[in-house]
Image (cartoon, rainbow, N blue to C red; front, top):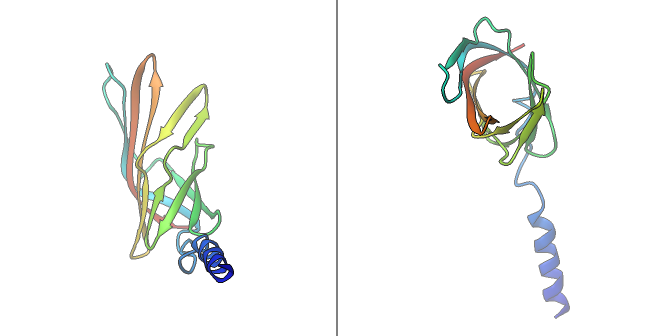
Length: 145
């Protein structure tokens, strides 16, 4: 009985250990968005498209524990988003929201993908306005600064 409990405790302790080396290092740093676009859409309004190649968007990515990143977009955003890393793909953790300027936005399906020294960025957020839901979809490519 005692050996069985010891094996169970060892199994439980090991299940909380990371599955391999931390893969966040290749993401960490400052990245400049050099191409792409964002499209904001609200019901009853024309979509607003913005060219990101001239917008000066920067991503500041820091490590936040094993296989975790915090990503902050600037200028303008003051809400870091937590991502989980698996290889060359980082995906925003579900259930995150960001509040600022009287609005709370929900982080939806957002990813960062490393390939050939470039970072492909995809952000998808939504927020309520007068009982309706507006969305922002951003896709672009960033280079390390």
